Amino acid sequence: MAMADEMERIMTIPLRKTKLAPRTKRSARAIKEIRAYIMRHMKVDEDNVWIDASLNERIWQNGIRNPPSKVTVKAVKFDDGLVEVSLAE
Image (cartoon, rainbow, N blue to C red; front, side):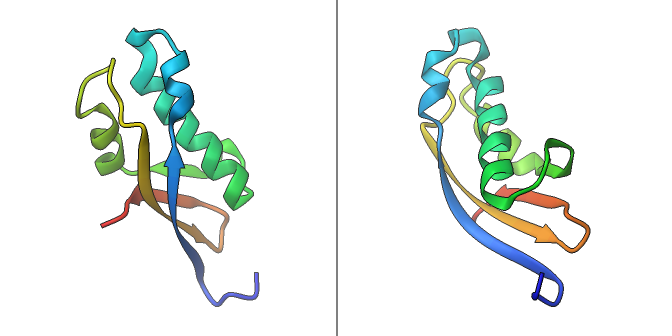
């Protein structure tokens, strides 16, 4: 990367496909969708995506059956390839 240290992006991730999952697995499916979206857009593999506790709590806020339909996140990619995903303020 030509960047000095890290790359930062604010993204709105659509979670439409979570409604296709059985209702007792929707929040878990939402987390997997977030991970897949970040892998695709930040060009990293699954092991290098770290999801912050605040984002996890936001997804699970309404329980397992009713995750949000979309979520706005801040993704920071560090030099070593690790991507940290947290809620955008």
